[in-house]
Structure formats: structure tokens, C-alpha cells
Length: 275
Image 1 (spheres, helix red, strand yellow):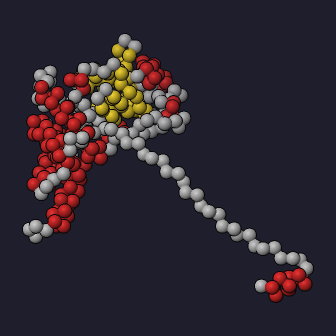
Image 2 (cartoon, one colour):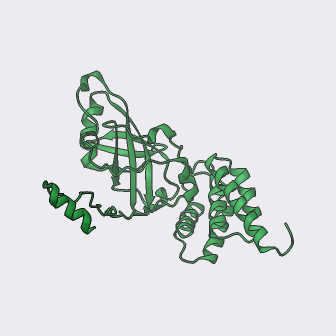
Image 3 (cartoon, helix red, strand yellow):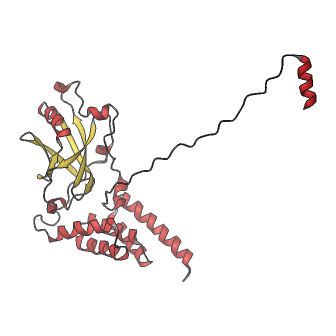
């Protein structure tokens, strides 16, 4: 790169950003740390600091991750991604409840997030645990479902983090009592709003003909947003963006009708002569 060439600098930064995104998508966190640091040396933007923070968090290098997100906030005080992760990491670093290395939940397998009619559905968690226990959680974390005293508890590493809302829990509890089994994972984590996707993994023969998620089977919206590897590129920011619905363009109809000609030969000749 020629010294002082702004175009070359922009091209190199763009190339490094693409490499960093691809590394994060593949879970190559060590390499992602180095790539983002190279990008920052060239004058990295807020996204580079957020990616660096995400990679360091995945490597459980939490103090360094906190510094990266704080640097992002210095560049943009209104950056919601950095702000939220600073809050999470500060809560984690000041918490003595969990030993280091045991703060993270198990990541759910990608297959769990593939929607299947009648076998997957979504739910919100209610009666949430204290914020200190929720701080380590992020989208993609596996959730254990446990039937207890007529409620369906959501647990992470055996610790209760909330309860599945009754709208979904009541039906699943009945099916689980007869032998059905389910897996779940978080799809949205923001302050006091936690949502998860639930998948039926085994249907007991005694439940033959009973659908786990009849709303989904009927084609109604289940508010499920599949979690893909790309969520790693959102740096644990799970705010949803509403897509604007575009009105279909109206196509002007062309008049394809032909002028009617008189059935009388003389009148047709007169018309032709006039034209």
C-alpha cells in the first residue's frame, strides 16, 4: 500500500473486515482477534471494536473484551451493541457466583433452529432470574426444559433462569408427561425480554395425533427468528429490526383493443381513404 494513499487504506480495511466477518462465522475466534486488531491499527471503526469484543468474549478473555466494547462506546456513545455488552461484561466481572470458565452456557446445535411445521415453536420466558444470572446469556445458548410443580422451567447448567409462558407450557407439560421430549435455545436476549425456540425431539406413541405446536402447524406466525451463524456477527445484539413492507407497484395496463371496422365494405373504404 502506498503511504498516504487513502483509497488503498479503504480497500485494505474493507478486505480485513470481510475476513474478520468470515472468521467469526466459522468460529475462528483467535484469528478474528488478530484480524480485527490489524483493522483497528489502520483506523478501525465501531464495528471493528465490536467484533473484537465478541471474539474476546468467546475466548473468555472478558477484561479485554470489556475494553474493546468501551472503545467502541468512545467512538459512538449511542452504539447499542457496545452499550449492552459493556453492561453484561461489567456484571460478569463483578459477579463471584460462577467460577471463571463456567460462565457460558452450552451452545445449541444449528439443527435446532431449523423450523419444522408443528414440531417447532417459540415462547417467551417469564418470572426471570435476577439480572446477574442472566448477564452471561446470549442468543444461541442451549436451554434445558424441566417440568416442576405444574410449571415448565428454563434452566442453564441446572440453574433456573425463567419459566416458559403458560400459553406454550401448558400443552408441552401434558405431552411431556406422556413421554415427549424437547430441546430449546435462546433466540432473543435483551434486558428483561428473553425468547426461545423449542423443538420436539421425540414424540411418544401415546401422543399419536397430538401436535406439539398447533399454531405453527396451522400456518400462523410463531414469531420465530431462526438463529444462524450470522448472529455471531451481530456481537450478541438481539434487537429486532422491523422490515418495511413495500407496496407492490401498479402496472399500467395497455389498451390492446383494436378499433372496430364497419361491416359495410363502402364504409371501410371511406375510413381507409380518410386515413
